[in-house]
Structures are given as structure tokens and as C-alpha cells.
Amino acid sequence: MNLPSLWIGLLSGIFGGLVGLGGGVIAVPLMVSFLKLSQHRATATSLVAVVFSGLTGAFTYATQGAVDWVAALFIIPTAMIGARAGALFANQLSEWRLKRIFGWYLVAVALLLILKPYIPHVGEPVQGWLRVLPMGTAGVLAGFASGLLGVGGGTIIVPILVLLAGLEQHVAQGTSLLAMIPSALVGSYTHYKHGNLAQEVVAGLVIGIIGGAFAGGLVANQLPEFWLRVIFAAVLIWTATRNLRGKPKPLEAHGSKP
Image 1 (cartoon, helix red, strand yellow):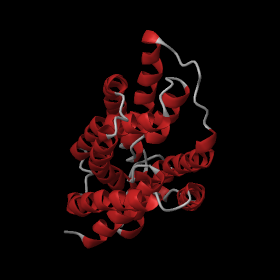
Image 2 (spheres, rainbow, N blue to C red):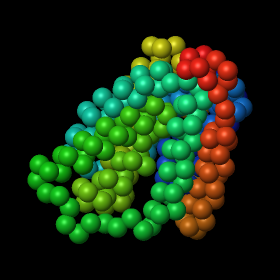
Image 3 (cartoon, rainbow, N blue to C red):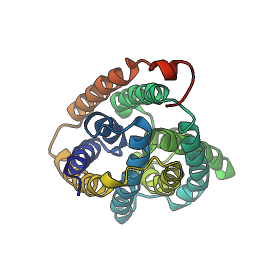
Image 4 (cartoon, rainbow, N blue to C red):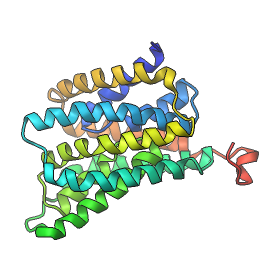
């Protein structure tokens, strides 16, 4: 087993468990920095871990009755389509452009973490078949982000389910975790076909992220949520600046993928 990948999985799982996010936003930059993987290979490898963290999280929420199975059934097909499109698009991007997109995504996640307590729960959500529209939209957008960046996509699905579909916050989170599993599978397989999966680090990353998510969830109940969100948002912003400062190599600057 690759020990550095195990530690990266642990750290990613702990951070994700502390604030209720998937570990991809931490795992990807750590694999790029410490394992020296390309952004494309880190993205592909992270998606495998997202599958298992989604399974663990969805099972936990389901045992508490906090999963809307009908909503998940509408989200999953569109998320799978979006994930394949995102993974294919990622393979058309140069390294520095993919890093730039990932950097801006981290900024958006950081802002959502800070604003999370202020997201209102709508009193009159859309009803009937109209509920399918926000669910399908959430699936496509989250799936695309998942395939493109190696993340779970929960930061996209949860606000849409809360604001437009009227789901309670915990139910939205549990539904999001369930919906991300098939899309992460599709995204990781698409990346695998393009030869981007770093198979030598998968085992350590998956074991670490599952154990870390469990530990982070336990610790989260003992710490003030506000400071957890602020600290994690600061870490994401710092990581984002490193991605956004990157400059293309001469070959990339002329539009060629290395």
C-alpha cells in the first residue's frame, strides 16, 4: 500500500467529515503537491475515493431516514450523463486550465461554507412534476463538476435541493451523497479509459478517506461549527490561490495539451 496516499486520504476524509463535504477538494491538491500527480490523474483518482466516501456517508444518512430516494432517482441519471461529459471535457483541457477551473471551484466552495447557515429553507417549494426540473438541473451540474474536477458535487446539489425542491438540509445532504456514487463511477471509468487513473495510490486513498471521514464526523460534534467552517474556508482559499497563480508552460500557452 502507498503510505503517502493513505495519509492524504486520512487528511481529506477528516476535513470532509468535519464540515460535511466529500474529500475531493482536499485530496486533489494534496495528490498534485505531494504525490506529484498531474491534475488530470489526481482528478481521476479522487473520483474513486468519492465513490466510497459517498457509500459510507449515504449509508449513515439512510439509517437516520435522511435520504429522499425519489429525489435521488431523478438526480442520478442526469448526474451520470453530466459526469461523463465533465470527464471528457477535462481530458480536452490543458493542465493549467484545469487547475484554474479547480481554483475557482474552491473559491465558490469556500464562500458556500461561510454562507451555509444563511441559506433559507423555502416555505413553498415547487410542487408536483415541476420538482423534477431542479433535481435534473442539480444532477447535470453536479455530475459535470464531478467528472471535470474529481469532486462529489454536493456543494452544487445541496443548495438547489434546499432552495428549489424544498428538502430539509440534512435530507438534501444525504440525498446528495447517494446521488454522487453512480456519477463518480461513470466519471472515474471515463478517466480510466483515457489512462489517467493512478492505480498505485487508489487503495491507500480509499482506506484513508473512509477512516478519516468517520473520525472527522466524530470530532465535528465536539467542535464549534462556525470556526470549523471558517478554518476550512481559509484552507480552501489558500489552496485556490496556488491553483490560480499557476502559469501555462510554453507548450500549453499555444493551446496544446501536454
